[in-house]
Image 1 (cartoon, rainbow, N blue to C red):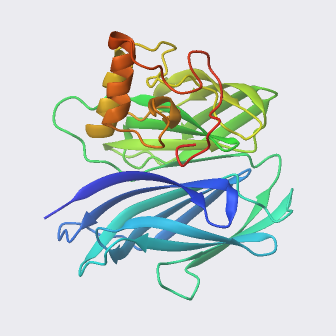
Image 2 (image 1 turned 90 degrees about the horizontal axis):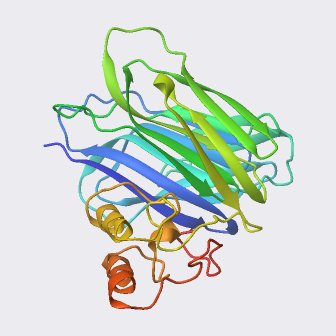
Image 3 (image 1 turned 90 degrees about the vertical axis):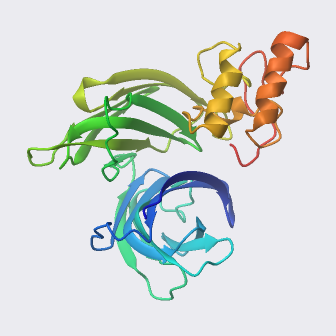
Length: 331
């Protein structure tokens, strides 16, 4: 029996109120057909963002992942955690990825910065590495493990840019390319213009697969950025992303699909995201119509009531774009 789950969770970092982290995991539980590879870590630093990919690890099944972060001198110590009711089973997790944005560098502006990782419940470091941080290390990129190819036509490609705390996460989803793909990036930051171009540096191979590819641009400041992303296969997307003095996103609440309008397409978008695995809003707060720090049925109903029944409008910022004045776990 094979169970495959993809989840995304956002949390504030314990002990560091300015930072946020996201955990993305995809796992197969008690699946005899899974061909586990040697456990590995891949860690990349982009400005004040760090991206950790932990592959082929065996942990308890059915529990949520987290990470506790501690700073020591010129470095960061990450303790992987699992929360929830313990279950008497083990899972093979092909890939766990977590991103920490706007972390403290212990006063290190440029130079060496250490990252050390401990597995769940262990007191001996599983991985440690040293990174050079500074002006030339503001971008990172990577590729997920190969996804199952559905029958018929492959799913539609999409590029999603999400503002984080002083960083931009770019996701290029459902990319059909050679199955031995390896991604490298060119990153150019010229004032408020950002260009991220990806290329495949893997050896040629006679097979194709379906992948999600990501990039992160860190160490940004107040203002509006014009971001151009050039993905594999010539896919190019340009989008504006803004930050205020808190590193938060500039948006209109209720414009969940980000098309610049608030209309019936937005409650439909919210329902698809909340209940059918649809695309996530570029700014999560834009779908939190009532500003209760949750995206659920109440947001879609509230927006429909406003549009067609004269109900109360979405919470601030609306109808003009602005910033969320009530910081919460969706920021």
